[in-house]
Image (cartoon, rainbow, N blue to C red; front, side, top):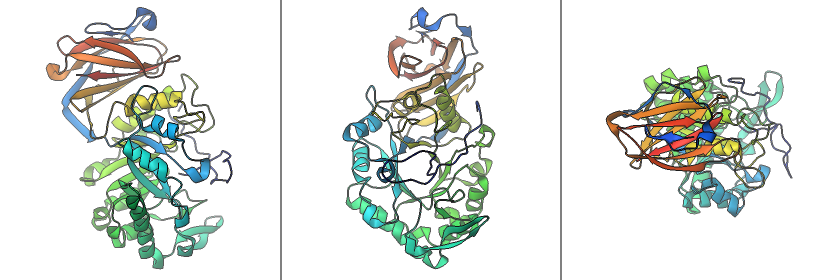
Length: 435
């Protein structure tokens, strides 16, 4: 999206941010059937139903977690901040995806290059989204009460596809192979950029997107509105020329996360969440336990929506995963519980999603390990048993975020008959890596 942004931007003004705020939701101690945390951490733990992890029940392949860099609007990440964002060591976010803009002016293509190159060096994939075509390709029209709305002229569709191709070639020639490029950022919330109707998006995909030399992402609706993506899925020619159905989740209710039509017609395509901040852009990212909302949001994006990617808006921002001083925020810690441990190519597997009230569990398999992420939003500790079907794994390492700790290692313990029990501290996130 672009915000965006009900926020000031240093130097030059960015597009104003939407006022839509997600309204959903509010909106350790391990044992094997052994224990490995201190009782003082858990207090009196409430027993929960066992969470069964089933590696044979495979779901979507995960492409990664990440955020947006936009040097022209908020300044570039520093060298140290790039490493914090895309590194996987303690204190780092572990991001494996970077989203950058496609500037309309090719003279402005270089500002995000250094961050993109470093992200690639650290193993991340890069995607790009345009806010506007070059000015010469745009015409104005009346859109509701907006008398100066912008849209791409039909006669310029071919030239616009070449513009996207040229950006892809520029990056490739400078050491960055784009994973994919979007047709348009938020074509259905474009008061400050370029509007596209569903029919226009389908026409471009049918007639022009096939010439683009990297994966094509569309439609990036600001609120995962299916009226933007249904026509793509229902048009075989347009669908053949798109690789990733991209969506944003601004104000999207959890009830609208599932996408039955994609399950029906999206075989061979990927489903990505390419931008969000949550729950708003006004509160500090270090508010606790409010930051647990981010953990639940990612859980639901993975489990309910079955997205393969989760990309935050600005990486470095007061409400983002990285604070302005370059350190991980509480929002960032919640993301790192997924990003550092659930790596690209891992597959989500079956898990009891809600073994207790306010407890959210998801599981993933890859690299010879099973990764389990558990979010406890409740105000009491929960004694949670995890059982891995077929008894896979003999040891489990864990990490914890709570009011005073960020992704802090809790050590390694053994498992007994494929099970271990943990006292999930009140208002915490834990990640378990089973080997």
